[in-house]
Image 1 (spheres, one colour):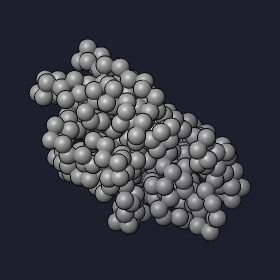
Image 2 (cartoon, rainbow, N blue to C red):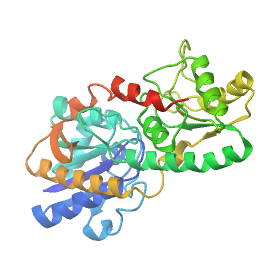
Image 3 (cartoon, rainbow, N blue to C red):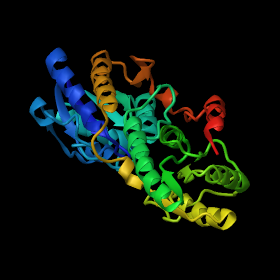
Image 4 (cartoon, rainbow, N blue to C red):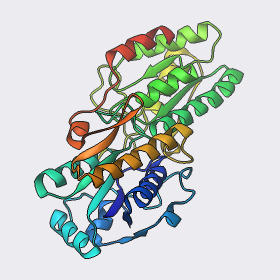
Length: 341
């Protein structure tokens, strides 16, 4: 078999480890050949494809980003499935491994279901919001980067007796804020799933300050205070019309300072969370998922994706992973309450 590999949507640490794991496993165990599809679905629609060998993937597991490039090109644009079939036939590509998040896997599932394309998936997102997998690679690295930033901000906050507001990624779910906030000892953790009002935020900040601490507030970019009508977004919209979130930290900081009298600064981590070297955990998980995707392709398990269940890599349908978001559950929110304030 000749397998095409593409990475689509937002990049994240661990993508290269998936590519390496898939190519090494496929070449050595299944005698497959591989084609690297550049910039996600765009490369398959525009025939921007090159051979991908074990030489091409050596030493890339620890490298951030993706050697194949990525884009948000929609698979049903520019001729859609029929154009993809023509390119695959011309290139002798027998199947596609699509590595991506919610949008990528939803599109891949539709290509299989409605158009009969031979596609298997690998889930990735730093937000950890894909359902039917315990964790996605990239999340551990993003949470580690955020935690390190919180640790660094704590020392300068304590020196100046300030409150620090740290904004992390998380459009619809708060996993990064929850994990980095718990790890970094935050006094307030604000996530989209559980809105709290301004007075509760001020109370948490005052409680920490009254104990002689420099209050730390960790907030997901998609957080909306209770009673607010919309998410804070000061960066306009992207080319697809989607709101570019970012700015809730800058929104909260002056309000906290006015309400509490505590000097407050905000820091927006932004794309720092997407870049750089993946953690060991993400490298191992990504490699295992890449190898499992090869097994799915070898078995003709179209529409399936490799998934983490406990410590095992299993096969689940791509449609089940994108049917709903994996939200922070009530139990996790309840258990962190004793740590706040």
